[in-house]
Image (cartoon, rainbow, N blue to C red; front, side, top):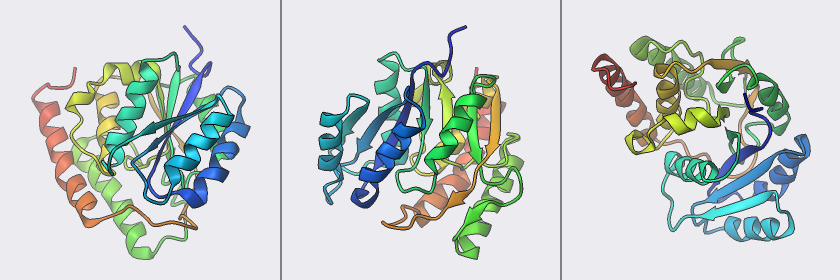
Length: 243
């Protein structure tokens, strides 16, 4: 079996992240010399895309994809995954660009993915490990994951978490055209696909930090999407639509 850590790629969606992108990209690359980064920018009006292009021109481990408009988190990741699968990357990370996911944890993911197919950085596997969130948002997140486990049966503590590492073969097995969610429920849907197909999922503990600069992308629409999407996943599983 090929080493899944041979050529890892971090897919980094961005929208108005000019305050963070110049710092987090070198911090990620410093973790491991094998890492490459794909910045997927949704035509940020603050100039994030231009900063990304300049960085890519100076370092062959940095790559950039541009979108014509703000299309959503899920769309950005799927574009990044398609790009990666067309090349020889062996595992692909999902990661926020705002330092809520600390780059140092990437080393733990690379160790864990040797013995599992999908690694999830979990805020809730060892209690509640979230820093500087308002209590209402923390309760919403925690109980959204309880609700997701109850509806879907998926044995994951942090199904909405966005710090992940997929082996290449997991993404190859998922039909991206069937992924319908685009907000944070995208995380649930991708993990559910992997679980239904029998891939090994492992959660590792992380501490999640609220962003220090920039604006959160959370919205009521994203919450509503997740509430109803889990029932659609359960129905599709009952109907045998995940093979």
